[in-house]
Image 1: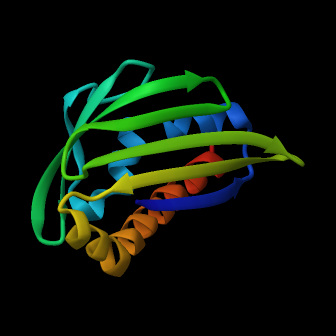
Image 2: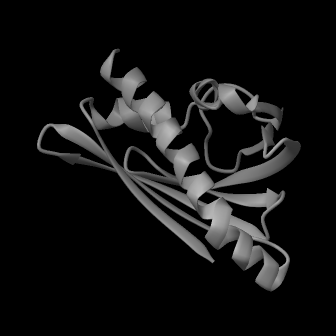
Length: 150
C-alpha cells in the first residue's frame, strides 16, 4: 500500500478552500496536462456526499477511466472519496481543512493499492507513488492560486 500525506497552507478562508477543493471544473483545469475530464456521474460543479464522478485521463501514454464516490462531506473541514472502479485495486483520498493562524491548512491523505500483487508493489515503489504525489502537488498549487486570487 502507498500512503501520501501532503500539507498545503492557503491564504484564504476555510469555506472558500473547502468549496474549491470540491469543484470539478477547477480539478479538471488543474489536470489539463493529462487531458483529464469528468465524463459521467457528476461532471461539473461541486461534489457532495453520494456523488460519483467518472474521470478519463491520459497517464503514462495510455487513456484510463476511474470512477470515484464521495463517501463523506463534513463542511468545511473534511471530505473523502474512494475508487469504485478503475486501475487501482483500491484508493481512498481524505481531504482535511483547518483554520490555523489566519490561513487554511489543507491536508491530503491518499492511500492506494495497485493490482498485480508483488509486481504492483514494485511499480508503486519505483514510479507510481512519486507520480501520484506530483499530481497532488500540481492540483494543490492550482487550488492555492485560485483561492488566493479570489
